[in-house]
Length: 448
Image 1 (tube, rainbow, N blue to C red):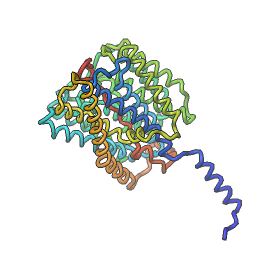
Image 2: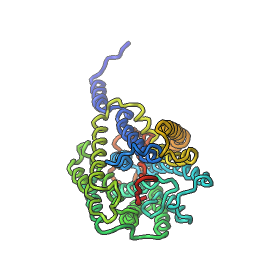
Image 3: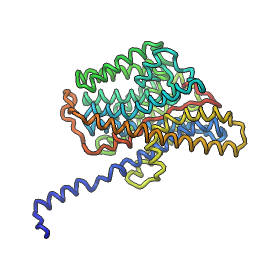
Image 4: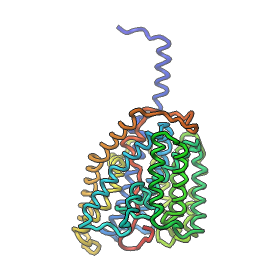
């Protein structure tokens, strides 16, 4: 027997439907971001694979690796600050970051070191404790230390961005992403004009930054002097970015791109305007034109402009397709993109060590070896995602949910999560970490 429906029930049901119906499922809502990650991951793999396997196919009218990185950085900027604002919990945010990034990162380091008897660790890695300190913080490139795996250098700028965003969030300055994007983009132009490289050199930036990083994040996570510690970390990140990066203008431009991604998200939500993104883009385009350290082919005016235009078009295309069904292969590649990013380069080295130099091989041999190495890379990335990334992400979510305290510092008052149950951003769909770009054959890039 059906109970009569009261007016109150009708109003409640209608309100619930009205609030829920415009919001698609998180998997649908975030599928376009996974697709962008998949595209970015494939671009970076192609950048590193083509010079060794099929150099005749490598494009030089744009840099496919830089394109992949910039797509990744835009995705990071679009989603990371908003994920922190949505949950309103710095402690949960950093638990998520650690369990998202470090387990696979440490596993790849262990693999590279374990096989160093066969394929030696690259010479850019110092043979002293400074390498340990730099790898512990992931601030590799901004303290002048090469990564054990070549592609780890871009993690430095992800970490700088996290530190800056945390400080801004606690100071209630996180809403000014458009202004920040323009400021960093203008800073990239100025830094490129006045400096040719790191001003702070030697091992001490790695040691000092490691000590500040450990103590500061301990305070941020535990809540003791949280806002002060976050500000110290943010200032440290900014100083390292400008004074200690291998290529300072490029590092500052990267952070500008990430804040531009945040500004795009705010514009999409109706909380900001789009013109700061246009200004940021123009400044990033001209940043290397007069930079002291800009002699590489991929920052020549036409190549750099084309790369940035393609990046913008790709991101805009992804946004236009949000909410639509996308190819499963792209969303799957986005899901495993962090594994793909960290694992592919060591596997390429090991494959070349076995197969030898394929650059002069016959085309059928090159094609066959390219297909074979891609199968191995995809299989290896899928395995590391399944058995390293996913379990550790789940562990991180469980740990961050135990006794989670709401933010208590003055800068955090009044900040509430927008949708507390919407964990897609901080969950396993989050694969925003970008890849590195480096040539090992052909045209040399002294940047890395």
